[in-house]
Image 1 (cartoon, one colour):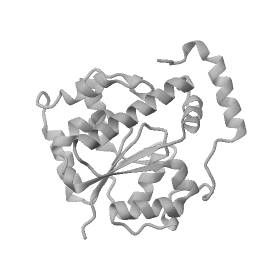
Image 2: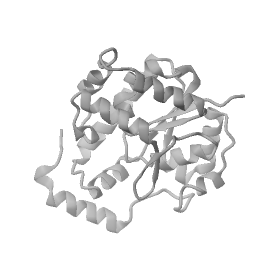
Image 3: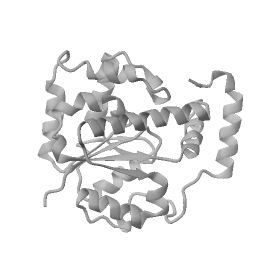
Image 4: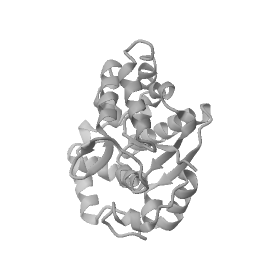
Length: 242
């Protein structure tokens, strides 16, 4: 049986690079080139650039990284028919020529409605990836994205609701994966992934892309929690608390 393509949707800072790296272990194509930081994000560089272009054309700034914007989602979707379609069709055609492929970019929760008409949705499986809010908040603060805990929780819940709304309205199959579940209960999570994607991934495939210890909940160190708290308190007046 031919395997479906995979689209991973996430609020960001959720461990999505580990999940996407795991999926590529099953032979999924992530692109000619992927975005590299201190690690491989497995984000197709052409997809990343086109998503950045969409945000720019819709007038969305960098606030999307900590503020949920239904207006931004609607503005990007409204670009359909108003911008040249060739770059978007060309990328999807290129990916289909390398199928099965995997897409992951933290901007996709904003842009997926624009992409939908170009995608072979019936030939795609979706994964919603989330992470424990305390771990997300700590990671955000350590990256100097100063946001209140309550604001970040509302932001991530709103994104999750938006993603589920898109999937539901289009009748699309999805699997909800948590980062903590993937790392602390890898056998169970990988079994669910294999059933969802028709793959034969193993824990050894996860070990190939994740260097930390498995079978224990991934947490920031006590030092990182203290450092995050100090950074937050120092920058408290500038926090995003919408």
